[in-house]
Length: 334
Ligand code: TXA
Ligand code: MG
Image (cartoon, rainbow, N blue to C red):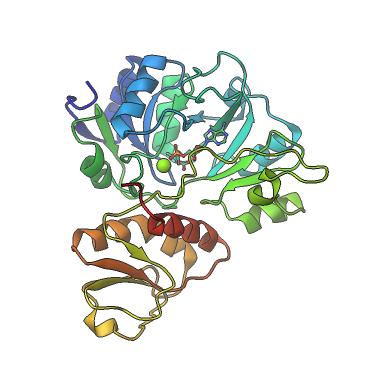
């Protein structure tokens, strides 16, 4: 059934938002803009809707979904906000930060949480997402609106390219401002753990906390005084993948390759590149994050033998950009 839907595209005006809320209430699937990427929304309390969503994306159902709510008050009805989570929510919501906390039983269906006792909570800042969440009046599951393993969508056209015929509605509000997914922190323990670098830079969070975030790799192996911490189950090695192979830390452009560059860098072989995109000619990482997924899709569409990527800064949004590129370049399942 997931492959036989008529996908409508509507402007994200009052009528579009009302239609989105109506479809969500009826258990349907709606792609909508958030400030990070477009999400594929459904009623997180309804197992049937969630099962349809997993099928539409081709997503393994062991990979839990983020529950989206309009505000802190609604979040407190879905999960138990630990002191660390309360402090981070007060400082950074609404915005590109997802907090994993103990789940309140029955507030979202088991399938949406992939059976976990924790729940990932996000309060998006985008006015269209806010309006839909308020109208829906229930937690909304919303993974990125791409086929599982593909590059995340930052425009309605990207969503259409991946999910046409598999979902009911796409609300178009133009390109997403942030361009990479939310930062995910595990707040189930006393020290927040960075599960996924994202649109809210680590440096900004650490400055607000006055402390360093724990590293999931160090914590997941346990150690003296440390509980093992599960990683975000969705952080599969290969993800965000275009169909062309991605070659990182490229010092030159090889024959037939397209080039993803930064700050005007022109490595040897530049003149022969099949195609070129500069993430930010001025070296601005905010601009680079906003353009990353669209440029990967554009370079992929050109049919180059590979996409070579110049070395990029690792600080601030550079951490999330490096994470997404590493997954795009990872060995693929056949
Ligand atoms: O910016 C975003 O977060 C976007 C927009 C649409 O809100 N959503 C998004 O969702 O990126 P998705 O499904 O593509 O990524 C959610 C990640 C997955 O890696 C999943 O494994 C992890 O969150 N996750 C969800 N629930 C979790 C939990 N209880 N514990 C640990 N990780 C969890
Ligand atoms: Mg995703």
